Amino acid sequence: MKKRKLDMILERVEGFSAPDPRLEQYSTPAPIASEILYSALMRGDLEGTVCDLGCGTGILAIGAAILGSRSVGVELDPTALKIANENARRLGATVGFVRGDVESIALKGVSTVVMNPPFGAQRGSGGDRAFLRKATEIGEVIYSIHNAGSEGFIRRFVEPCKIEEVQRIAFPLKRSFKFHSKDVEIIEVELYRIFCR
Ligand code: SAH
Image: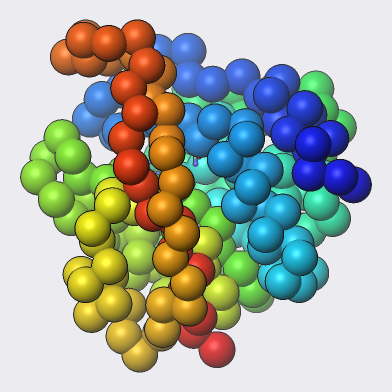
């Protein structure tokens, strides 16, 4: 499947109906999701089981399934999971969605983790720690989005796993919370590819 086709399919994924700022519910926009997944596909990282930690309404997990992975999504919020299930059904993707906290969930047989974790922007930095900890515990390769400028912290935190690549991306945040003043705010984020093999 061409990247553009994937992008068009993922545009049809519904986002959060009532995003919860405490859980930092920001959906990954379709063009960014397809960019990440396509680059994982090209590197052979979608051949085994893919896990999306904090899957929200499912865009990354669904995209991985559409590209041929066995795909699992973990999410704390039942309302988001309900939308995720509907999204998967509507797009004909088979995804195992699991309700759980990434801190305590037990998962086996995962080869690749793809995630857009909370950045910790609302509660001070470090919201992504539990996610990185679980990702390095279960994954062989990790694709993860973080605030720009996180490289030093992430390098130390994931040891002995290694950062293989860092890519800057402009991430449009839709106005979804009261404290946002603009309709769309572009923030600089970084996509990390981390190797734990
Ligand atoms: N992966 C989705 C959503 C990103 S927003 C996407 O890319 O569109 C981050 C998600 O992590 C939210 O859906 C939030 O509810 C979830 N989340 C936050 N803390 C969590 C935790 N401890 N365990 C599981 N999910 C969590």
